[in-house]
Image 1 (cartoon, rainbow, N blue to C red):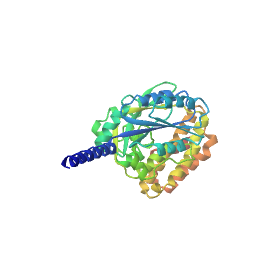
Image 2 (cartoon, rainbow, N blue to C red; image 1 turned 90 degrees about the vertical axis):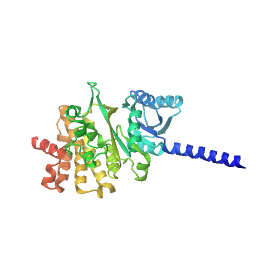
Image 3 (cartoon, rainbow, N blue to C red; image 1 turned 180 degrees about the horizontal axis):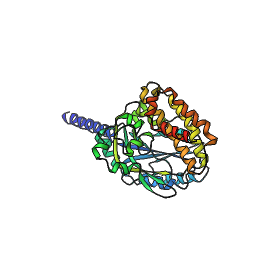
Image 4 (cartoon, rainbow, N blue to C red; image 1 turned 30 degrees about the vertical axis):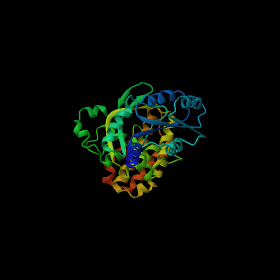
Amino acid sequence: MKSKIIYFLLLLLVISAFVFYNKTKLTISVIVPVYNAEKYISKCLDSILSQEGDFDIVVVNDGSTDSSLKILQEYAKKYKNIKLINQDNQGVSAARNVGLKAASAKYITFVDSDDWLEPNAFNLAIDVIKKDKSDVLLTGYYDVYDREWVRKTRGENEADIVPELSRFPTRTLDKLSLFSPFYAKDAYSDLYYSGTDIRGKFYLKEFLDNNNINFTPGIKCAEDIIFNFQAFLHNPKISILSAPIYNYRNRVDSESKSMDMVKWSLVSISKMQQKEEYKTASRNTQMLIDDSLLFLINLGIYNIYRQGKTIDDIKIYVLEAYRSFDKYNLAERKSLRNYLKLENILLSL
């Protein structure tokens, strides 16, 4: 009888240890939306598969018309940790949302089909997450330009002259510096800039699920920025990893894409302002979010000028964006970096 009790207690201990291990082990689901990425997808997947750790890859083929699906099927057949989902074309937001529903790991990260990870990316990220028990981890990333094939981190020249303690005063960041990277006096590093998109970030899935954070369908611009703003407004514990572990392929925009960026940015601003998180945020935070989204309009204009074109065809949209800031007083508007840039553009016309 005594031996049976000991056996039962040992069995209970083993079961408890197994449950605890599965509950606490750090797993990662990588969500990769794919649309007509036959030229890039192998490099993307190979960079993920070469990582160490307990991870799976959820690939969502969003109605590709090239050979992307065939390539993905070959990878899914070869690797058991790849889950392939095929759907009609619905856009990147819908594809990522499908990936979120299918993901089962403790942490979520996103990799676009034309981007790739640095070696040892997961190990570096996991070290910080385990130490901080982060809701969101921000990491550095490389910009990789198609034409020049230049790799650089944003703001690295400025960051080099700033002492480490000044760049990263704490392991968790002031949320306002994420909404407006140049608003905080110590925001010299690209980690502050990278606060507004999803590249190179890791999210606690429980945090996303509990706060019903997903991507807004029906928009073609800034869907990832809106996703992040929603997350930040729920006051997550945010940690930082200074090492660049993500490579972002910064493909040169065509004139039509630049025009669309300006037009769709207005839609994105409107969609963000309809979110409950935005409505309940402070006026200062709302102002900084609006200004951050205005950056995309400035970027679209810059790309159009770079191609030797004018903004005559989109001037009405630019003026609409500029006038939408009339609700803020003069002192507030003078504190907004992207608003002042847009003002200078309009004055030069």
